[in-house]
Image 1: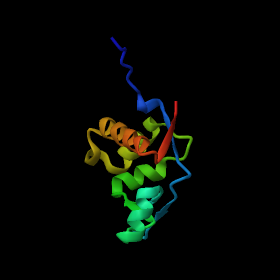
Image 2 (image 1 turned 120 degrees about the vertical axis):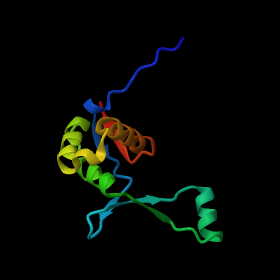
Image 3 (image 1 turned 180 degrees about the vertical axis):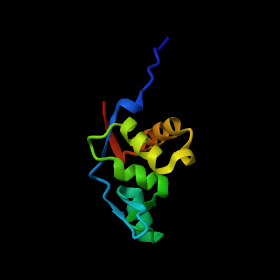
Length: 114
């Protein structure tokens, strides 16, 4: 039987992936820019008029978390900042934040330093 290990994301330090530039609008919401690469994307761009760069718009919570990722703060420290900023709005905070960080890592928007 394979031993299953659990990741404790609260101890990890997330770092932005430099392959995904981002910008902030006047409402302080973050947009991550994703370059569409590969043969299928090039065909879609040519024939279906799909964009070369897709934009992923984050909501106010995701934008706040994204801007706290600086390569030195742990997920726990980011959680404390989010709790001060939003309070009860983000409860259950730790579960939601760990899931969000795992999703960002899965789509390679961030890397994790363990």
